[in-house]
Amino acid sequence: MTDVPRVHLETALQKVGGRWVAATPDDQLHSFEGRGGEVSEVGERIVELIDGKRSVAEIVAVLLSEFEVTPEVAETDTLDFVALLADKHVLTF
Image: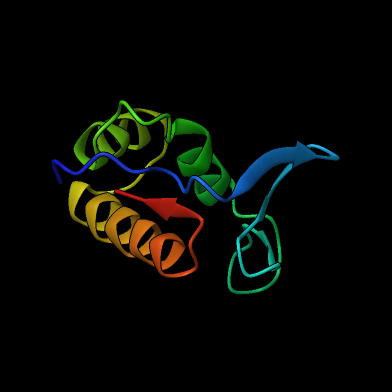
C-alpha cells in the first residue's frame, strides 16, 4: 500500500475522446473498461490519480471519499487493478 505507482517510462498515456488510453512498449493499446466493456469510472479515476507522487494507500483514500465502497473492496480492487496495469507495462513502481 505504500508503493507509488507511476506511468511506465515507455508508455504513452493520454485522454482521447474523453477516455484514457495507454500505448505500451509492446505496441498495445489499452483502455480502461469494466467487465461488460463499458467505461470503468473507477478505473479511469485510478489512472487520473496516478501521478508518481501518491501511494496506493493515498489513491484508495481518494476513492473512498468519492465512491460508495467499503475500505476492503477499495483496497483489494485498487491493488488488483494497479498490478494488472503493471503486468501490461502501463505502470511501474
